[in-house]
Length: 535
Image (cartoon, rainbow, N blue to C red):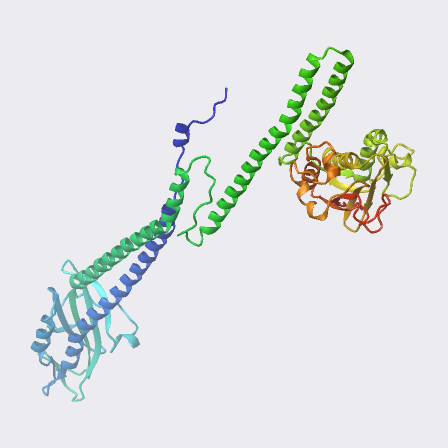
């Protein structure tokens, strides 16, 4: 046994993300990614800037020592004013600092002689000879168990005197040049702390920016969603029968199409409810009158003792019952015609010529009973009435022939349209009058015309007679019996099949055949449907 979902079941369904969550889920990852990329770029740029600044600071004592290497008059190589350079180097912020100046005679494989500082600093990386002399080199290494940054400079010192004593060596050499290696080393702690502090400040700034952006997005969405919240609250507070349009005041421009669509739906629903209420009221009124008449006639027949008069009352009851049945059938047809469904069957390829001919055959006995001339003009021209049914019945070999006037419509509804038009013509045409049903085509449409010699309808009343329970106010029309539903049903069915009905004077159609009448006498009802082009 199937059960419909309860409210509790609906509440257990997962809730969809709202606009706030969607915007935050869409924007925040992008903002975080951009801030992370920006922080990463800033970190590398800052690290490079700090490294360059510290490297330049580390290079200054190296250059100062390089400029202080001199050859004394006695031929000894020494560092001039080494104390001043050491004092300048000691003034920097690093705790662990080391200097080294060593010389090696050019052209010999002898050991390096240290002129100043510690003798065991890590040597610079090996470089080609043309790139190793006169150009400073920066590299990272470990010294005494600590990471250090070292700036190294190689240069050559020449002496043109011919005899040369190496300071501290105590002997002479014939070399005319020395290879000098100058190194300055300091721990990497200060520069690492500087980079870390700058990175922390950058991350703190980015975090604050992310929080501010998130709050701005949240507040902006909340402010933007406030009219929608009011709209939702007003809809929830409405009574079920409240069909007033929504108030668009204060709605954002992007929401106005939604409000307009809802108002359009409300207006359509209100119109439909009003039409249904009016239809029920009119139907009740139309049914109340014949039922009251039937009640009076039945009561009169019950009281009557004369058999002949009793039979007259019963005949009157039968006539009134027939009219009431016709009214009930029209009410059901109108309800079906105004209800957008396919209860009557799907549209198909229909021959309008054959349907119109069938309607003429159906109402021919009624027309003869009223002493009326009901004529037929086939779309194929002047053919005997007996032969005009060959298109629907088939050819001599039993094969169905091509439709004369093919249209895409529901055959039952098309039959109902023409039946109402012919029935109206018979009802309003006086005895001895004539009615002509003709079918023809033009460039794009298939046309079925019902032309009568009745009183006609004035031009200013032709639009209103298509409304429910609206009848022509002329004296001839008031003399007939009817509820004023025939044309309403006919037009509703015609429009359901993408067509329409037009009313005109009987003699106003150019080239159309019909009863002889002057312009303005009689009525011409024309059913117009799109013609199907069969190739």
